[in-house]
Image 1 (tube, rainbow, N blue to C red):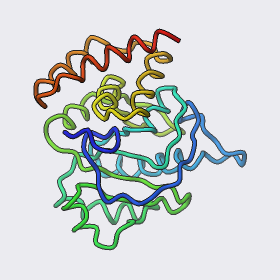
Image 2: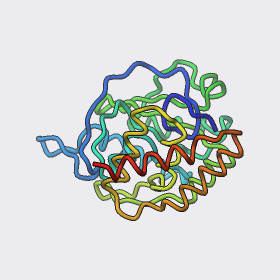
Image 3: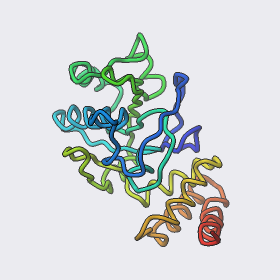
Image 4: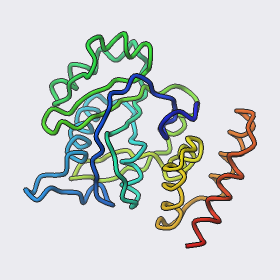
Length: 225
């Protein structure tokens, strides 16, 4: 696992430039004035319908997960992890196309083989979606600890609060640290002990010594305001 450019369980490369779009504090409550769900929510619901039919394990992470746990977040795209190997992506491409999603790259197979990322656009809204192909290990464990949330009447597996905070601390950018501060301030039931244990294990695995102390610092900062 890499700290990467986003709070993903893995570094992602080759991403298109994006324009940020804001969603509401609670994903499932975000709507346009027309009565339709906001673009990120509409894209997420359509994606959930496709992936549920395919019976693959997956979860939402990143900014949309922060929104779902009650912290408003500017977001340029929707990030999900799907537990698939690159060789298996061909079978979901057609389903995604039929479900309203088009690839943002010409040679999907080559791009996925190189990056383990499938870049898509949700045609009805123009919202960008990145599917990260998960691997055994940390992402496999995260996929088994998801929180199932009802969004627009559709069940969506969301990265657990524990894992969301761990990935944010690991990513280490200022906006990720601010996400953690806000989650600690506004979210009830933060499993601080489990987070400490996970970060201590990652410090040892990655031969680092800053992850758990960094979390402790964020805990103190979140209680100061």
